[in-house]
Length: 273
Image (cartoon, rainbow, N blue to C red; front, side, top):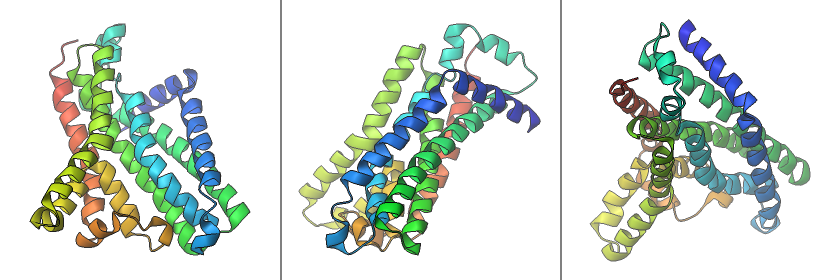
């Protein structure tokens, strides 16, 4: 554990030196504030406080931005070191490859924790100050931050997997972009097409909810929908959330980082320094 913490400190200093931590936090703050003010108009008509509407808007933002930030930070974690010639030096340290990955993961996860907490927290404080906040909306904000961090952890581990499989940083970037596109955009389009073709049949009522929660991005949405009773979060996913047991979405988001990290460790072991 001490070796992992030492590696994580080194990686975190690299992120600070490269200004990545600052830029990620700045992006989260700007987008969260923009969506907070842009989405505040319906709050009076819906009869809810501004923070509830803000959390709904930021949930949509996090589905797209959390995976993207995680992949941006992790896609060259392994292949980048190999291209720079520093991977061989890292492998001479008295730490196993799984420990090297764990150190990187811990540092990168801390960076996401800082960016998500400051970004969504700032927007939440502003929304509460301008439009009020109830206990339920505060709980929803905390849940949004925690689940966004979990979603980021999923794509951190998948980014390490892409980085371990690619033979160059450019290839890893392309593979990570394709991964983001599939999980965040194309998967839902495919499910939508299948639902339209099924026309309310067995697929729509029994298979579709489980396929949705198998995708970590959709599991994130379903978890936040199922856990909230606010009208601002009521959308087309409410039916899917109600058709699933309460543990389905949390289990998916908790299992994906573990499975992704184990797969990345297996792929990393095949790399020759």
